[in-house]
Image (cartoon, rainbow over the protein chains, first blue to last red):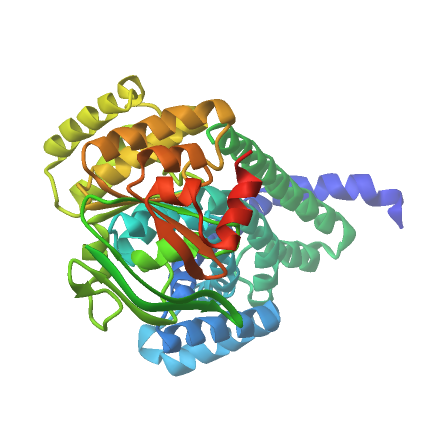
Length: 225
Length: 241
């Protein structure tokens, strides 16, 4: 059955290269939105987890544990079907529902990245700031956070790589990402392996390029230490 | 100026400070010596509530710092502290390290803070490093920066927690010289130190701590020449030779 592999591959590419490109665009867009809002929400969650206020830290801890302890696919289903029911007035598109599910999922992981980044800052830094008379909040904003960002940024880059791969699950709902395009092509050409290979190569190019960029960035941060 | 009343501190079941009642007057220069684990650092850190006492009180200028509702940040502004590991802020320049707190806490205008910082840097011989990042400084320079950073808040008292213990031997002198200069200018000072020669030379009073208590205290001549307590004698016998 592989005798026609190469000619089929060429046919698929010739006919559908535009679709694949569009799919790659959606995958990147979906990942970008996820990481961007996931970072904002995750940072807030990390600060809540560190809060002295018990209800806040309990909520954040519970949130992170539940999200990380259940499958992403389940969360996608849940939000995809639940959101339009719960918030009908918002008229959420399926793309929006999927985005929200991905953001909520990613924020739990980012929360732990941010928390680890903050914890990695030497405690002596906080003590020095507090003895100068800075409040806990001023210490966090002026002393700890600027140093934590250096620890967090490379980890966020890696989260981006992970999210690119995870967005493939969103194709369950045909949101136009790479895997969605694979399904389309498979359906119209009755070919399975060839479009899969194409999509796989595109995923790999995206993630490989990005992780190399993150590594280079990380090395530059180290130099400036 | 600072008074502790029945100060106790435990970490879990480990009693680090046992019932310390002590009074530090304005202008005193106090060296705290003793074997490691005797509670010297913890005692110092209780004075500005970096360690919260398990029981007892700490009075600073007549205010009970351990009382509920005390604005500890405001009182800490008047108590400078220098740490063994410098803890300078690596993401800020030397100048920013010094001006951050006075400007942020509205003690000085940015220009005023900068002028004062430059003046202090000149005093410790670091004027040419003002725009550098601390990573370019040696250990001794970092510690001098840490001292200046604390001085920029015009503290009433300076607390030194083993300020030379993490330094290469050849850099100890430059840091001690800065502290000595401060002391000469009348700064009330408490210093936890293993530099016995320095303690003997600069202090007005020496506290010898052992097992969470102040086992013996007095003027340096008395402590170093005629220690009364056998534990003091044993300790000094080990460190002075």
